[in-house]
Image (cartoon, rainbow, N blue to C red; front, side, top):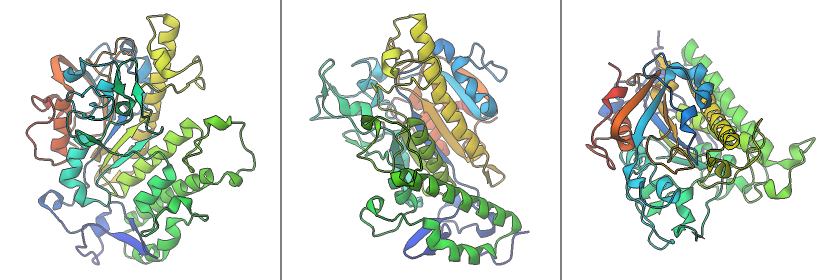
Length: 452
Protein backbone atom coordinates (compact mmCIF):
# COMPACT_ATOMS: atom_id res chain seq x y z
CA UNK A 1 0.00 0.00 0.00
CA UNK A 2 1.28 3.46 -0.85
CA UNK A 3 1.75 5.60 2.27
CA UNK A 4 -0.87 8.25 2.99
CA UNK A 5 1.76 10.99 3.13
CA UNK A 6 2.01 11.15 -0.66
CA UNK A 7 1.30 14.57 -1.99
CA UNK A 8 1.14 15.69 -5.57
CA UNK A 9 4.49 17.38 -5.60
CA UNK A 10 6.02 19.50 -8.29
CA UNK A 11 6.80 17.60 -11.48
CA UNK A 12 9.52 15.55 -9.79
CA UNK A 13 11.14 15.26 -6.37
CA UNK A 14 14.71 16.31 -5.69
CA UNK A 15 17.09 15.62 -2.86
CA UNK A 16 18.50 18.98 -1.90
CA UNK A 17 21.41 20.32 0.09
CA UNK A 18 24.15 22.98 -0.08
CA UNK A 19 23.04 24.43 -3.44
CA UNK A 20 22.78 21.11 -5.24
CA UNK A 21 19.75 19.13 -6.32
CA UNK A 22 19.78 15.43 -7.14
CA UNK A 23 16.74 14.17 -9.02
CA UNK A 24 15.21 10.96 -7.74
CA UNK A 25 14.21 8.05 -9.95
CA UNK A 26 10.55 7.34 -10.58
CA UNK A 27 9.03 6.09 -7.29
CA UNK A 28 5.33 5.24 -6.87
CA UNK A 29 5.40 6.55 -3.27
CA UNK A 30 6.09 10.09 -4.48
CA UNK A 31 4.34 10.10 -7.84
CA UNK A 32 4.59 13.73 -9.00
CA UNK A 33 1.78 16.02 -9.97
CA UNK A 34 1.09 16.04 -13.68
CA UNK A 35 2.48 18.95 -15.67
CA UNK A 36 0.90 17.84 -18.91
CA UNK A 37 -1.66 15.39 -20.21
CA UNK A 38 1.15 13.06 -21.27
CA UNK A 39 2.38 12.85 -17.67
CA UNK A 40 -0.98 12.65 -15.92
CA UNK A 41 -1.09 8.85 -16.00
CA UNK A 42 1.67 8.45 -13.43
CA UNK A 43 3.57 6.17 -15.81
CA UNK A 44 7.34 6.47 -16.19
CA UNK A 45 8.43 8.60 -19.16
CA UNK A 46 9.86 7.20 -22.37
CA UNK A 47 13.53 7.92 -23.09
CA UNK A 48 15.59 7.46 -26.23
CA UNK A 49 19.30 7.21 -27.04
CA UNK A 50 21.20 7.03 -30.31
CA UNK A 51 24.54 5.21 -30.17
CA UNK A 52 26.70 5.60 -33.25
CA UNK A 53 29.66 3.47 -34.32
CA UNK A 54 31.68 4.39 -37.43
CA UNK A 55 32.79 2.52 -40.53
CA UNK A 56 29.75 0.30 -41.03
CA UNK A 57 29.70 -3.49 -40.65
CA UNK A 58 30.35 -6.68 -42.58
CA UNK A 59 26.70 -7.35 -43.33
CA UNK A 60 27.04 -11.11 -43.82
CA UNK A 61 27.93 -11.28 -40.14
CA UNK A 62 25.18 -8.83 -39.15
CA UNK A 63 21.90 -9.58 -40.96
CA UNK A 64 20.13 -12.76 -39.73
CA UNK A 65 19.24 -15.25 -42.46
CA UNK A 66 15.59 -15.46 -41.36
CA UNK A 67 13.12 -12.92 -40.04
CA UNK A 68 10.68 -13.17 -37.14
CA UNK A 69 11.40 -14.41 -33.62
CA UNK A 70 13.16 -17.70 -34.25
CA UNK A 71 16.18 -16.25 -36.00
CA UNK A 72 19.76 -17.21 -35.32
CA UNK A 73 22.12 -14.47 -34.25
CA UNK A 74 24.96 -14.04 -36.79
CA UNK A 75 28.53 -13.67 -35.59
CA UNK A 76 28.61 -9.91 -34.99
CA UNK A 77 25.31 -10.01 -33.08
CA UNK A 78 26.03 -12.98 -30.80
CA UNK A 79 26.56 -10.69 -27.75
CA UNK A 80 22.81 -9.94 -27.93
CA UNK A 81 21.89 -13.45 -26.76
CA UNK A 82 21.15 -12.36 -23.19
CA UNK A 83 18.96 -9.43 -24.34
CA UNK A 84 17.60 -10.90 -27.56
CA UNK A 85 14.00 -10.66 -26.37
CA UNK A 86 14.44 -6.90 -25.83
CA UNK A 87 16.00 -6.03 -29.18
CA UNK A 88 14.75 -5.51 -32.71
CA UNK A 89 17.22 -6.23 -35.51
CA UNK A 90 16.07 -3.98 -38.35
CA UNK A 91 17.42 -4.65 -41.84
CA UNK A 92 16.57 -2.95 -45.12
CA UNK A 93 16.55 0.64 -43.80
CA UNK A 94 18.09 3.13 -46.23
CA UNK A 95 19.38 6.68 -46.31
CA UNK A 96 18.84 7.78 -49.92
CA UNK A 97 20.24 11.28 -49.40
CA UNK A 98 23.62 9.74 -48.61
CA UNK A 99 24.04 8.09 -51.99
CA UNK A 100 25.86 11.18 -53.22
CA UNK A 101 28.90 12.82 -51.71
CA UNK A 102 31.97 11.21 -50.19
CA UNK A 103 32.24 7.86 -48.46
CA UNK A 104 31.99 9.03 -44.86
CA UNK A 105 31.34 12.70 -44.04
CA UNK A 106 28.19 13.06 -46.16
CA UNK A 107 26.81 9.97 -44.43
CA UNK A 108 27.78 10.62 -40.81
CA UNK A 109 26.52 14.20 -40.52
CA UNK A 110 23.01 13.21 -41.64
CA UNK A 111 22.76 9.99 -39.63
CA UNK A 112 20.03 11.58 -37.51
CA UNK A 113 18.70 14.09 -40.06
CA UNK A 114 18.30 11.90 -43.14
CA UNK A 115 18.73 14.89 -45.43
CA UNK A 116 21.39 15.94 -48.00
CA UNK A 117 24.69 17.22 -46.57
CA UNK A 118 26.29 20.26 -48.20
CA UNK A 119 29.77 19.68 -49.59
CA UNK A 120 31.91 22.38 -48.02
CA UNK A 121 35.34 23.05 -46.59
CA UNK A 122 33.76 24.60 -43.52
CA UNK A 123 32.19 28.00 -44.23
CA UNK A 124 28.63 26.87 -44.95
CA UNK A 125 28.17 23.56 -43.16
CA UNK A 126 24.74 21.97 -43.42
CA UNK A 127 23.52 18.61 -42.23
CA UNK A 128 20.32 19.10 -44.19
CA UNK A 129 18.16 19.85 -41.17
CA UNK A 130 17.59 19.38 -37.47
CA UNK A 131 18.44 15.95 -36.06
CA UNK A 132 15.75 13.71 -34.60
CA UNK A 133 17.12 13.99 -31.05
CA UNK A 134 17.05 17.78 -31.14
CA UNK A 135 13.56 17.90 -32.59
CA UNK A 136 12.46 15.84 -29.60
CA UNK A 137 14.43 18.12 -27.26
CA UNK A 138 12.64 21.18 -28.65
CA UNK A 139 9.28 19.65 -27.79
CA UNK A 140 10.02 18.08 -24.42
CA UNK A 141 13.38 19.37 -23.18
CA UNK A 142 11.60 21.66 -20.70
CA UNK A 143 10.43 18.60 -18.76
CA UNK A 144 13.94 17.70 -17.56
CA UNK A 145 16.95 19.61 -16.15
CA UNK A 146 18.90 18.91 -19.36
CA UNK A 147 16.99 18.99 -22.65
CA UNK A 148 19.47 16.48 -24.11
CA UNK A 149 22.93 15.05 -23.57
CA UNK A 150 25.57 14.64 -26.30
CA UNK A 151 28.49 12.31 -25.60
CA UNK A 152 31.59 11.10 -27.43
CA UNK A 153 34.93 9.42 -26.78
CA UNK A 154 37.11 11.50 -29.13
CA UNK A 155 37.55 15.27 -29.56
CA UNK A 156 36.08 17.05 -32.57
CA UNK A 157 38.29 16.91 -35.67
CA UNK A 158 38.54 20.11 -37.70
CA UNK A 159 40.22 21.05 -40.94
CA UNK A 160 39.65 19.84 -44.48
CA UNK A 161 39.94 16.34 -45.86
CA UNK A 162 41.69 17.28 -49.11
CA UNK A 163 41.01 13.85 -50.57
CA UNK A 164 37.27 14.50 -50.79
CA UNK A 165 36.88 18.26 -50.27
CA UNK A 166 34.73 17.99 -47.13
CA UNK A 167 35.24 19.56 -43.74
CA UNK A 168 36.27 16.95 -41.17
CA UNK A 169 33.75 18.52 -38.80
CA UNK A 170 31.04 16.41 -40.41
CA UNK A 171 32.69 13.24 -39.13
CA UNK A 172 32.45 14.38 -35.50
CA UNK A 173 28.76 15.28 -35.19
CA UNK A 174 25.44 13.48 -35.43
CA UNK A 175 23.39 15.88 -33.26
CA UNK A 176 22.30 19.11 -34.97
CA UNK A 177 20.24 21.89 -33.39
CA UNK A 178 19.73 23.23 -36.91
CA UNK A 179 21.16 22.38 -40.31
CA UNK A 180 24.19 24.60 -39.73
CA UNK A 181 24.64 24.22 -35.98
CA UNK A 182 26.04 21.00 -34.50
CA UNK A 183 25.89 20.51 -30.75
CA UNK A 184 29.04 20.25 -28.69
CA UNK A 185 29.75 16.77 -27.38
CA UNK A 186 31.26 16.00 -23.99
CA UNK A 187 33.92 13.32 -23.69
CA UNK A 188 34.96 13.84 -20.06
CA UNK A 189 32.83 11.70 -17.71
CA UNK A 190 33.51 14.02 -14.79
CA UNK A 191 32.14 17.04 -16.63
CA UNK A 192 29.14 14.98 -17.72
CA UNK A 193 28.51 14.12 -14.10
CA UNK A 194 28.79 17.78 -13.12
CA UNK A 195 26.25 18.71 -15.77
CA UNK A 196 23.83 16.07 -14.57
CA UNK A 197 24.25 16.34 -10.81
CA UNK A 198 26.91 18.92 -9.96
CA UNK A 199 26.89 22.10 -7.93
CA UNK A 200 25.26 25.18 -9.36
CA UNK A 201 27.32 28.33 -9.64
CA UNK A 202 30.65 26.55 -10.04
CA UNK A 203 32.20 27.77 -13.27
CA UNK A 204 34.59 24.88 -13.80
CA UNK A 205 33.87 22.19 -11.20
CA UNK A 206 36.01 19.66 -13.05
CA UNK A 207 39.11 21.80 -12.26
CA UNK A 208 38.43 21.87 -8.54
CA UNK A 209 41.32 20.63 -6.41
CA UNK A 210 38.91 18.61 -4.30
CA UNK A 211 36.17 16.52 -5.88
CA UNK A 212 33.15 16.83 -3.56
CA UNK A 213 30.76 13.93 -3.93
CA UNK A 214 27.21 14.99 -4.66
CA UNK A 215 25.75 12.52 -2.20
CA UNK A 216 27.65 14.19 0.63
CA UNK A 217 25.44 17.24 0.18
CA UNK A 218 22.06 15.54 0.02
CA UNK A 219 22.26 12.61 2.45
CA UNK A 220 20.37 14.41 5.22
CA UNK A 221 17.44 15.08 2.90
CA UNK A 222 17.67 11.49 1.70
CA UNK A 223 17.44 10.13 5.25
CA UNK A 224 14.36 12.23 6.02
CA UNK A 225 12.60 11.28 2.80
CA UNK A 226 13.44 7.60 3.16
CA UNK A 227 11.35 7.34 6.33
CA UNK A 228 8.26 8.30 4.35
CA UNK A 229 8.69 5.83 1.51
CA UNK A 230 7.12 2.43 1.14
CA UNK A 231 9.43 -0.53 1.84
CA UNK A 232 9.80 -1.29 -1.86
CA UNK A 233 10.67 2.31 -2.65
CA UNK A 234 13.17 2.42 0.22
CA UNK A 235 14.96 -0.47 -1.43
CA UNK A 236 14.86 1.26 -4.83
CA UNK A 237 16.15 4.50 -3.36
CA UNK A 238 19.04 2.77 -1.54
CA UNK A 239 19.96 0.92 -4.72
CA UNK A 240 19.84 4.15 -6.70
CA UNK A 241 22.03 6.07 -4.24
CA UNK A 242 24.51 3.19 -4.26
CA UNK A 243 24.71 3.40 -8.05
CA UNK A 244 25.33 7.16 -7.89
CA UNK A 245 28.12 6.63 -5.39
CA UNK A 246 29.68 3.89 -7.51
CA UNK A 247 29.90 6.17 -10.54
CA UNK A 248 31.28 8.99 -8.38
CA UNK A 249 34.06 6.73 -7.13
CA UNK A 250 35.02 5.60 -10.64
CA UNK A 251 35.12 9.17 -11.94
CA UNK A 252 37.11 10.42 -8.94
CA UNK A 253 39.61 7.60 -9.38
CA UNK A 254 40.33 8.37 -12.99
CA UNK A 255 40.41 12.11 -12.30
CA UNK A 256 43.28 11.74 -9.81
CA UNK A 257 46.31 9.87 -11.09
CA UNK A 258 47.90 9.95 -7.62
CA UNK A 259 45.08 7.70 -6.38
CA UNK A 260 46.72 4.77 -8.14
CA UNK A 261 49.13 2.57 -6.26
CA UNK A 262 50.30 1.22 -9.60
CA UNK A 263 50.13 2.89 -12.97
CA UNK A 264 49.95 0.87 -16.18
CA UNK A 265 52.58 1.49 -18.82
CA UNK A 266 50.64 3.72 -21.24
CA UNK A 267 52.42 5.86 -23.88
CA UNK A 268 52.06 9.55 -23.10
CA UNK A 269 50.45 10.30 -26.46
CA UNK A 270 47.68 7.79 -25.72
CA UNK A 271 46.48 9.68 -22.62
CA UNK A 272 43.69 12.23 -23.10
CA UNK A 273 45.66 14.97 -21.35
CA UNK A 274 43.38 17.78 -22.45
CA UNK A 275 40.41 16.03 -20.88
CA UNK A 276 41.20 15.30 -17.21
CA UNK A 277 38.92 12.68 -15.77
CA UNK A 278 38.63 10.75 -19.03
CA UNK A 279 40.19 7.28 -18.68
CA UNK A 280 43.05 6.59 -21.06
CA UNK A 281 41.61 3.12 -21.62
CA UNK A 282 38.97 3.36 -24.37
CA UNK A 283 37.04 0.41 -22.96
CA UNK A 284 36.77 1.95 -19.49
CA UNK A 285 35.86 5.29 -21.03
CA UNK A 286 32.84 3.85 -22.81
CA UNK A 287 31.84 1.91 -19.70
CA UNK A 288 31.70 5.04 -17.53
CA UNK A 289 29.78 7.03 -20.14
CA UNK A 290 27.27 4.20 -20.44
CA UNK A 291 26.88 4.17 -16.66
CA UNK A 292 26.16 7.89 -16.80
CA UNK A 293 23.51 7.31 -19.47
CA UNK A 294 21.81 4.84 -17.15
CA UNK A 295 21.93 7.35 -14.28
CA UNK A 296 20.67 10.17 -16.49
CA UNK A 297 17.66 8.13 -17.58
CA UNK A 298 17.06 6.67 -14.14
CA UNK A 299 16.91 10.11 -12.53
CA UNK A 300 14.98 11.66 -15.43
CA UNK A 301 17.76 14.23 -15.70
CA UNK A 302 17.31 14.00 -19.46
CA UNK A 303 15.29 11.77 -21.76
CA UNK A 304 17.39 12.21 -24.88
CA UNK A 305 21.01 11.10 -25.39
CA UNK A 306 23.31 10.77 -28.38
CA UNK A 307 26.73 9.15 -28.19
CA UNK A 308 29.43 8.66 -30.81
CA UNK A 309 31.53 5.65 -29.83
CA UNK A 310 34.15 7.12 -32.16
CA UNK A 311 34.37 9.79 -34.84
CA UNK A 312 33.97 8.68 -38.40
CA UNK A 313 37.20 7.91 -40.26
CA UNK A 314 38.57 7.14 -36.80
CA UNK A 315 41.87 5.29 -36.83
CA UNK A 316 41.35 3.83 -33.36
CA UNK A 317 43.41 0.71 -32.92
CA UNK A 318 41.57 -2.44 -31.80
CA UNK A 319 44.58 -4.65 -31.23
CA UNK A 320 43.31 -5.26 -27.70
CA UNK A 321 40.84 -7.71 -29.28
CA UNK A 322 41.92 -11.27 -29.90
CA UNK A 323 42.59 -11.83 -33.59
CA UNK A 324 42.71 -8.11 -34.42
CA UNK A 325 45.80 -6.09 -35.30
CA UNK A 326 45.06 -2.69 -36.72
CA UNK A 327 42.71 0.25 -36.89
CA UNK A 328 38.96 0.15 -37.49
CA UNK A 329 38.85 2.42 -40.53
CA UNK A 330 41.73 0.62 -42.19
CA UNK A 331 40.15 -2.79 -41.68
CA UNK A 332 36.74 -1.59 -42.88
CA UNK A 333 38.38 -1.12 -46.30
CA UNK A 334 38.79 -4.88 -46.36
CA UNK A 335 39.07 -5.25 -50.16
CA UNK A 336 37.25 -8.58 -49.73
CA UNK A 337 40.30 -10.13 -48.15
CA UNK A 338 39.23 -12.84 -45.67
CA UNK A 339 41.83 -11.85 -43.08
CA UNK A 340 40.58 -8.24 -43.07
CA UNK A 341 36.92 -9.21 -43.06
CA UNK A 342 37.48 -11.45 -40.04
CA UNK A 343 39.01 -8.59 -38.05
CA UNK A 344 36.41 -6.10 -39.27
CA UNK A 345 33.52 -8.20 -38.00
CA UNK A 346 35.27 -8.82 -34.68
CA UNK A 347 35.43 -5.07 -34.08
CA UNK A 348 31.72 -4.76 -34.88
CA UNK A 349 31.01 -7.62 -32.49
CA UNK A 350 32.86 -5.76 -29.74
CA UNK A 351 30.69 -2.67 -30.28
CA UNK A 352 27.57 -4.84 -30.04
CA UNK A 353 28.92 -6.37 -26.83
CA UNK A 354 29.11 -2.91 -25.21
CA UNK A 355 25.58 -2.18 -26.40
CA UNK A 356 24.28 -5.42 -24.94
CA UNK A 357 25.87 -4.62 -21.59
CA UNK A 358 24.14 -1.23 -21.53
CA UNK A 359 20.79 -2.90 -22.21
CA UNK A 360 21.42 -5.43 -19.45
CA UNK A 361 22.08 -2.61 -16.98
CA UNK A 362 18.90 -0.79 -17.99
CA UNK A 363 16.90 -4.01 -17.75
CA UNK A 364 18.23 -4.64 -14.25
CA UNK A 365 16.52 -1.54 -12.87
CA UNK A 366 12.84 -1.96 -11.90
CA UNK A 367 10.60 0.93 -12.92
CA UNK A 368 6.83 1.14 -12.81
CA UNK A 369 5.36 -2.21 -13.76
CA UNK A 370 8.48 -3.25 -15.67
CA UNK A 371 12.07 -2.13 -16.03
CA UNK A 372 13.88 1.00 -17.09
CA UNK A 373 14.68 -0.69 -20.41
CA UNK A 374 10.95 -1.20 -21.03
CA UNK A 375 10.61 2.58 -21.01
CA UNK A 376 13.54 3.23 -23.34
CA UNK A 377 14.38 3.13 -27.03
CA UNK A 378 18.12 2.58 -27.43
CA UNK A 379 19.19 2.68 -31.08
CA UNK A 380 22.62 1.44 -32.08
CA UNK A 381 23.87 1.70 -35.64
CA UNK A 382 26.15 3.14 -38.28
CA UNK A 383 25.72 5.49 -41.22
CA UNK A 384 26.93 2.96 -43.81
CA UNK A 385 26.61 -0.77 -44.24
CA UNK A 386 29.70 -2.30 -45.87
CA UNK A 387 32.64 -0.04 -45.11
CA UNK A 388 34.45 -1.10 -48.24
CA UNK A 389 31.63 0.14 -50.49
CA UNK A 390 30.45 3.01 -48.26
CA UNK A 391 26.91 1.84 -48.96
CA UNK A 392 24.18 3.92 -47.24
CA UNK A 393 21.49 1.29 -47.85
CA UNK A 394 20.50 -1.68 -45.67
CA UNK A 395 22.09 0.01 -42.69
CA UNK A 396 23.11 -1.94 -39.56
CA UNK A 397 20.44 -0.83 -37.06
CA UNK A 398 19.44 -2.25 -33.67
CA UNK A 399 16.62 -0.95 -31.48
CA UNK A 400 16.61 -2.01 -27.84
CA UNK A 401 13.82 -1.46 -25.34
CA UNK A 402 10.06 -1.38 -25.65
CA UNK A 403 9.32 2.35 -25.84
CA UNK A 404 6.88 2.34 -22.95
CA UNK A 405 5.58 -1.17 -23.74
CA UNK A 406 4.61 -0.21 -27.30
CA UNK A 407 7.33 -2.01 -29.29
CA UNK A 408 7.12 -5.70 -30.20
CA UNK A 409 10.72 -6.62 -29.46
CA UNK A 410 12.68 -9.84 -29.85
CA UNK A 411 12.50 -10.09 -33.65
CA UNK A 412 14.39 -9.58 -36.86
CA UNK A 413 12.28 -7.29 -39.04
CA UNK A 414 13.43 -7.30 -42.67
CA UNK A 415 12.09 -4.44 -44.82
CA UNK A 416 11.88 -4.68 -48.58
CA UNK A 417 12.10 -1.93 -51.15
CA UNK A 418 13.24 1.54 -50.22
CA UNK A 419 12.39 1.98 -46.55
CA UNK A 420 13.75 5.27 -45.17
CA UNK A 421 15.62 5.16 -41.87
CA UNK A 422 13.64 8.30 -41.03
CA UNK A 423 10.48 6.19 -40.89
CA UNK A 424 11.99 4.62 -37.77
CA UNK A 425 12.78 8.05 -36.38
CA UNK A 426 9.21 9.19 -37.02
CA UNK A 427 7.96 6.16 -35.06
CA UNK A 428 10.32 6.96 -32.20
CA UNK A 429 9.20 10.59 -32.11
CA UNK A 430 5.61 9.41 -31.88
CA UNK A 431 6.45 7.36 -28.79
CA UNK A 432 8.18 10.37 -27.25
CA UNK A 433 4.98 12.36 -27.65
CA UNK A 434 6.34 14.67 -30.37
CA UNK A 435 3.40 15.65 -32.64
CA UNK A 436 4.90 15.63 -36.15
CA UNK A 437 3.56 14.06 -39.34
CA UNK A 438 6.93 13.66 -41.03
CA UNK A 439 10.64 13.88 -40.39
CA UNK A 440 13.55 14.06 -42.84
CA UNK A 441 12.69 11.90 -45.84
CA UNK A 442 10.13 9.80 -43.98
CA UNK A 443 7.13 8.40 -45.83
CA UNK A 444 5.24 6.78 -42.94
CA UNK A 445 5.68 5.30 -39.48
CA UNK A 446 7.00 1.75 -39.13
CA UNK A 447 3.91 -0.18 -38.13
CA UNK A 448 5.97 -3.39 -38.29
CA UNK A 449 7.57 -2.58 -34.94
CA UNK A 450 4.29 -1.89 -33.14
CA UNK A 451 3.05 -4.11 -30.37
CA UNK A 452 -0.13 -5.76 -31.68
